[in-house]
Structure formats: C-alpha cells, structure tokens
Length: 277
Image 1 (tube, rainbow, N blue to C red):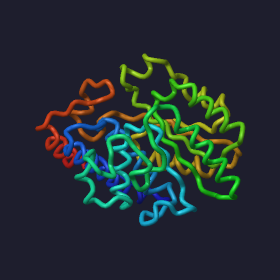
Image 2: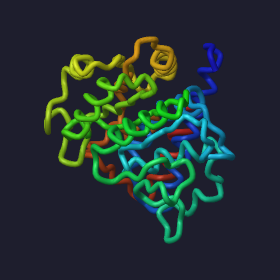
Image 3: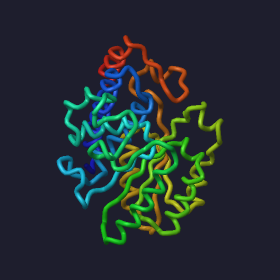
C-alpha cells in the first residue's frame, strides 16, 4: 500500500483490531484494553502496510520480525494477528483460558507470530539489537520492528540497547514507542520524565520521528520514511496515542494503566466502536 487510497482500508483494519481486542476482553472480563485500543492504529500500519510476512508461515525465514517488548500488551498483538490471519478467528474465544495459545501475557512458545516472550519490561529492545546483528551476519535484508512503551524508558537496559544499536549502525532496526503517558504507578511523565524524548533519541544516534500514533496517514508516512532512510543508523518512531481510542467513554475514563470495565460495558464499548466507524 503506497497511496492515499490505502488509508481507509488501514483505518478499517484498525477498527477490526479494536473489535477483536474488545471481544477477547469480554471473554475474561478484563485485559489491558486501553492500551490495545490506543495501539490499534500503529499495529494496523505495521501488519497491513509495513511488515513483510506470510500469515500461513509465521516462521518464514525472510520475514520481518515484530517484537512486542511490552508483554502485557499481548491482547493488542493477538488482535492484530487475528486480523492478519496468523491466528484463526475461532481461537479468539479462548483468550486467557487454560491450554489457550493466547495467554494474558505474551509468550513466544505458545502463540504463532509472537516472536519474543514479554514480562519484565525493558528487555525487548536488547533482544531486537541481538536479532538485528544476527540477521546482518546472515546477509538478511529483513527488518526488526520493536514496540516498546514510554514506561520502558525508565529502564536502563533500554538505553543500553539504544546506545548499542547506534554503535553497530543497525539500519535494520525500527523501534516504535507507544507514548500514552500511563503506567502502573500513574502518569509516565510524572514517574520519571522522558522529555525531551526526541532530543534524547537523536543524541543516542537514532533517526527520530514523532507522530500522532492514532493518525493512520501520519503513521504510514513515518513508517515509509523509517524504512527508506539511507543513513546507516537505527530508526525510532515515537507514537503519541490515546488510551481507549475509538470508545469515547473509555477515552475519558480516569485510568492508571489498567482500565476497569464493568460486565455491561463490553457491549456498550462494541456499539460505540461500530458507531464511530
């Protein structure tokens, strides 16, 4: 997809990703649904515009890799993998259940298309750096996309990986930072200030862009620029997103990382999403 005519299709993909996430959340009555709704647009652009992959062959050697550093965002990635056809839609109802391939926190051993196991934050970018070095040693032209959170900028290991990536001139690495200003203890900017975030990544030697992470057109342009950038350096796209995006009453809910959704609100959320299409 390279034209403006593709934008409506990507918007529909994002809506479908949100729907999958809400339906999974409804199964268990819980989940990190605010993050899933907020990240749906960047996931739609990742899987239906940027990534080179084969849904029917998740371990295809020449694929681009998508690493989910934020393990608790698993419901968001499952929604994208369901929409992409990597995971059969029939499995959506198994989310979080015993023996399911869709556990509440991402685990690579269980789920097709889940490249790394999440959990403790701050490790994904380091894994991505190692993978990029490995791909280069094999002469591969594949890219690694790594989704991390603004909360992970608290972790020293993230900055060690950022410094290593620029040292090794890893031009096959594209980091995506979901900046929703929420983490378990409150607002990310209050827990440990991350601004000026653009200046900091540039100082670490990365090609840096900052966009509205819920603007499909802006995301598409940023992804294209990152992939085509000619300089031998890693690339980062800082994506400002809104928690609960697409469901107005969740967008405005007071939240500190985990949104409480009452049993009767799941259907209301699905209706609100449909009305916003």
